[in-house]
Length: 204
Length: 124
Image (cartoon, rainbow over all chains, first blue to last red):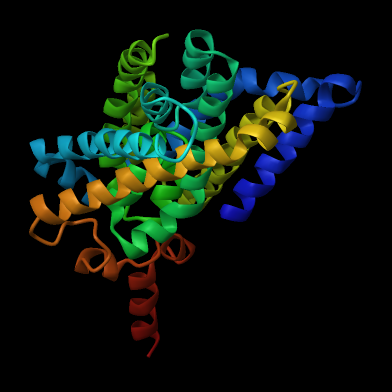
């Protein structure tokens, strides 16, 4: 899976660089417009995997409020990591918190921060959140083995509800997907709110 | 939020009538969709005018801002779940339920092992 992910990313970057000027490959520039449709199919297939597994549904019935610890920990841990970066990079505390509040949602975070805090922070936000999404693909199997499935969900941040799901479902027990989606949805909901809050703190 | 709705439709399909023999195909389709999404992400990234320059100048800072928040999230959640989920949680690796079914893909490759063992018994 990791090899497929790396290969797809490298091919995508090459296509992104070459396609606009190539008459043969120019249609590839339209691929990103159809990601919602692909995500739709992906979610159906993930749902089928969940629904076909009776254990998942049993676990869903047993779920209690402790599930909220997951997004809470994801958000707080991300922000703590972002705050720590202030000692290691030239950006302000507010800017670092704003970038880390993206939690893997690179498109939204990159645009929000780029508009409010300038192109450099926007690019850093875009890249770092993209790196987070991509590293999740590679590190989820390791996190499941060395820590636990909750920690693997936490790595993915806001993307645990969509793109990271197939990796989680492959390497962690299938019932994980229920918690992963719920954590991802709640974390994603917090991204725009926290981004704007820390943009204001950074003076944007 | 539409993602959640679509997921629920998938769950219903999987619960009600999705044939077990198509589980492997379903799994392969998941991998294909994921690869397409990452490929698409690469296109967005590669088509940025100053992508390589951005990568060279801002790459280290970006990497740091990816790795530390990831580590913070994972470690905090790990600590919290160890603290507040004292029982062996149902989705930890050492759980017996999972050890009985170590690899779902392998399971789907051999969809009805009980029947085949029974048929061997019958033959014997």
